[in-house]
Length: 266
Image (spheres, rainbow, N blue to C red):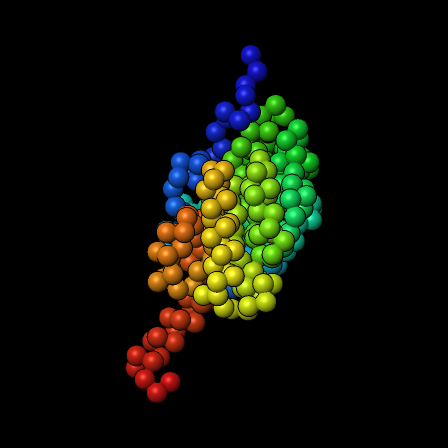
């Protein structure tokens, strides 16, 4: 009797966010950007559902990624990675090291999204390179017949950061393996010609469209927010994969608040 790979549970220690999103949950996370595994572990221990180790804009180098994945692995927070770009080897390397999901930046077309998702899945569902001994494959705990089961649990996040991505968002959302459509507010506002104007009607229309499309096909809309007052309005729009700031911002904000509390002139 052949076991259906999709029916197998994730490997021990793997945190499956896909099933939670499919159940309609709202998940909160944050971004690890400082390049410090200790800072990453501290942030993960706060209790976020997920933590994004940012290789695109953060200080962490690809060679240091394993230390951050181990740091998050001491907690119940899912370890996600944003690679520098959508090349096959960058995507495969992050997954082989044990990322629970990936956020792929700068995706403008359905073809680009489809290719990136294919790099995240083992054959026959995709074209991810296969080595049973990697951390992402369970360190040999999955057999050749079972390794395909990992495809069912890896979270696929596609960033929506350009007018082209917004225009094609329905086609992108329809791709199997795209679980989250994640708005990058800064990039999107700049590409729309309204840098940082997050109350501009064009920007608000774009993100509302992303949220509406995601909900229509049972996918999650995501966004990065730095102002806690902005969370409720975005949840009302339908966003339910929400990033709350980053470690660098928390460090600067906490230090600034302490200094100003003792010396308001600063």
